[in-house]
Image (tube, rainbow over all chains, first blue to last red; front, side, top):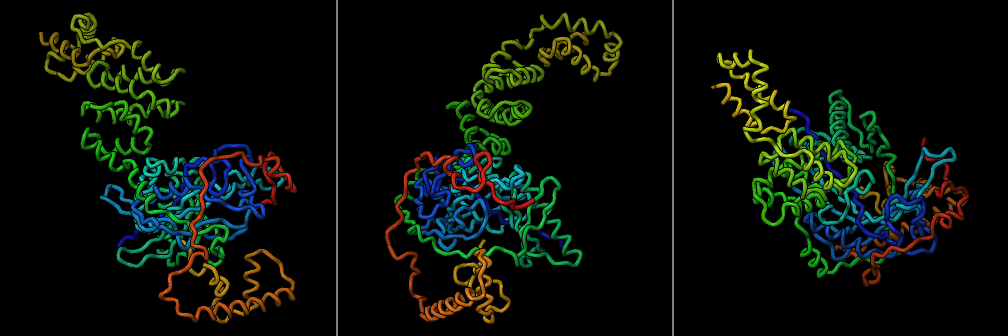
Amino acid sequence: MAWQGVIGLEVHAQLRTRSKIFCACPTTFGAAPNAHTCPVCLGHPGALPVLNERAVRLAVVAGLALDCAIATRSRFDRKNYFYPDLPKGYQITQVTAPLCTGGHLDVATAAGVVRGRIHHIHLEEDAGKSIHDASPAGTLVDLNRAGTPLIEIVGEPDLRSADDAVAWLRELRAILRHTGVCDGNMEEGSLRCDANVSVHRPNAPFGTRCEIKNLNSFRAVRDAIAHEIERQQAVIDAGGVVLQQTRLWDAERSRTLPMRSKEEAHDYRYFPEPDLLPLHVAPELVAELRAALPELPAARRARWSAAWGVPAAAAAVLCDEPVRADAFERALGAGPAADLAAAFALFVTGQVQAAHQRSARTDADVDAALPVLLDVCARWVQGRLTNKMLADVLQSAFGGDAALGAELERALAQVGAVVTDAGALAPTVDAVLAEHADQAARYRAGHTPVLGFFVGQVMRRLGGRGDAQAVQRLLQQRLDQ
Amino acid sequence: MIPMEYLSIDSVLHGPFQAPSQASTADRVAHVARLARIELRPEEAAMLGHDLDRILAYVEELRAVDTDAVEPMIHAGDRGLVLRQDVERDGLGAAMATAGAPATEGGAFVVPRVIG
């Protein structure tokens, strides 16, 4: 029987607060090194941490959105280790009594619904940033990120393939974004993922697991897990044993490398954080936050499907990002025609996304242009724009310098109207038929596929602006005369 | 997830030792000193070992008490944590933050090379 992968993800998500978790320094990304530091996040002796209320609320919201139990009493612990970007010499985290426990996240996959349970979610502070290769003087340390509020979401080993893991992480990100907990930006490190991977034969006990670190894109998550499952299978097939290790994903060479083994594993000497009292979360606050939970992406997709028939794949792409999903709903307005909503979803995730990816335009620019794009889509669906005209409009508008909405209006005006009138089409049709009398004879001799050739010729002369059906009708009429 | 043996006193009692019960006081002191990155002279190690033995003996004494029916106490005070509003304020700034550093570059602390 085949080997099966067993995967559990540990996800660090940066909470969307204005200030750090234990001090008032700003959390803005991209500031000059150490601009956002103070005695608390620099770890100066005597400085005391004061917990950010919003960080607690966001962590509770994450727990509620993932069906966790919220602890009315939790506490903080110190995790002790030495590294230059950890100025206090310990990280404040929650080990023994985390804020949220239990919970689960279901994702739809090709093989059906996969439930990935959640062991717990805890609050903790981020470390600073070490830059190893920028200076000959040594390692540079920037503590702007030190003290940034994080939640760590610890998943149970319930996932069975790299694709399941990516689907689970993608759904988790969509939920964290919809609830405003985290911006989900993996490039800036707002969302980071480690994967625990082992292999086993179905129904046999789990094998020894390796933890893979440094997975900072969906692609890295998929590739690293797939690679690690193969590596462990190969080790076992060759008669070896998998060692419990922490491994680092090397994206450039597509392989995982050992970082440290269990024997060298850090001994963190956890103990309760004496500078912080236990965290009490009032049941009233939990009830308030539960009542205020927004519609989650799964519910939103289901609503789109039921009300508008939006295909699942398009809905999933649009609901990845709540800002985009909101803009989509706003553009459609209160009562959209059901057929147009589905077509618009496919249009936005198809042609528009392709044009967007080839351009340098921002998401916000495209989101703002959705009402005009809806107009473009309607014209195309109704046959007032041909495929060629649509492609021209998108290419011209996305390539322009002004806001996309304005560029689309301009391109629509420029491309003009589709030519459907037989009288307007006749001169071109007749000219083409006259030029290709031999082909016309073939058609009349029964070789009807030649019609396609004629349609193509006419459309080319009309710059793609002819209505294909009208052209075909007129051609047939003339040829059958 | 955190292996339970790394929690609190268990780390000192068991550490990475093959047979925890047979770990000598000297082993335990050396283990903790390594984790804390401190260098101990032999007489210091002996003194700390003496203290550690007494502390561990006291802990053993506490362990003998049956606490099955007792709710674990997180903190001596029952008051909850006081929280602060999420309002940002300028910090010290890079110049003051790094004023006491032996070496800086472009506002960053320079430390001995960690890897590479």
